[in-house]
Image: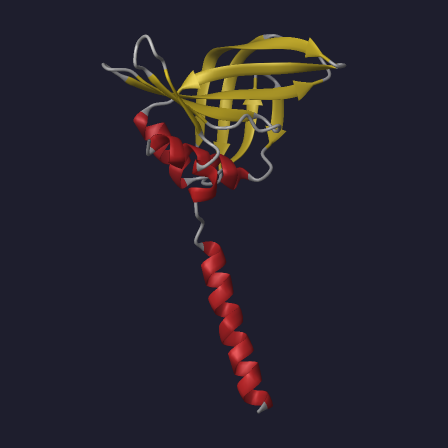
Length: 159
């Protein structure tokens, strides 16, 4: 009897751990907002701005589709420069070394920010790999809960 109970427990544990690895993006899709411009008919899909660092946005016009990521990193120093880098869990980097980084001051810290339009290849990379860290000019930040960003880019790209 103990052996049967142990076998059932082990099998159930394996089943639950396998299912936990199947990541569902549906919970993230519910949080993506969609707005239609009443004058132009353009549709905008936006992920929530997560307090950590970034959000994704997709603009659908009659003649083109643009998807971009906006990144923000807090720092204690005011420094303006160039360069936005997204480090992925497979070691690849999405980079725009000449992209300007802006800085603003609020509540005792500086917020460095920049946005880049993503290519189709970059969108595919982001759908398949987690962003582990970002760099804006000289300011780095590790990404906490990277799966949520991956979930949002999957949702937005499928709209």
